[in-house]
Length: 196
Ligand code: S3P
Image: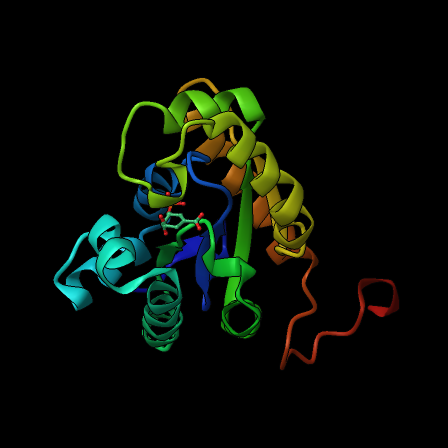
């Protein structure tokens, strides 16, 4: 699939990073549809590879085994043709995964406010790290620990509390800006102010 944004070709995968509840899957799916790319959810791929839910992987094998599987699955996915990839909240915290993402993808950090995150993660009970008495405290800790690293993403987009399409629109705008400002490899065009 030859995806473009405006007239700019997209040759690398778009990788969504950010905390649980920031909307990586919901926004990623819509973004992929808008730019004509396949959407892949890394957590779903990990579950399929393990034949277990994320909750069960944590319970039966432990978090370290989950992180190993996550690293392997994301490396495999990033070797595939360009697509939109939603990653689990811990993926970009892994140095090796972060390196892969930087080499092979364009990363977008979906940054969301604490209240929005808390409301969203409270709706479901499918996240092992939040099976605790005090979700607020854990979430605050993760924000403090992870936000500086998420900040290494190529692009930061504020995950809006309104309709998903608003955030998708922001992501598209930011992507276009990023691609426009990127030095073009292999073009022999002279810089604009030196043209005849
Ligand atoms: C995790 C986030 C989850 C999932 C796992 C661990 C994390 O994904 O990968 O429960 O460490 O933040 P989402 O961010 O998609 O909820």
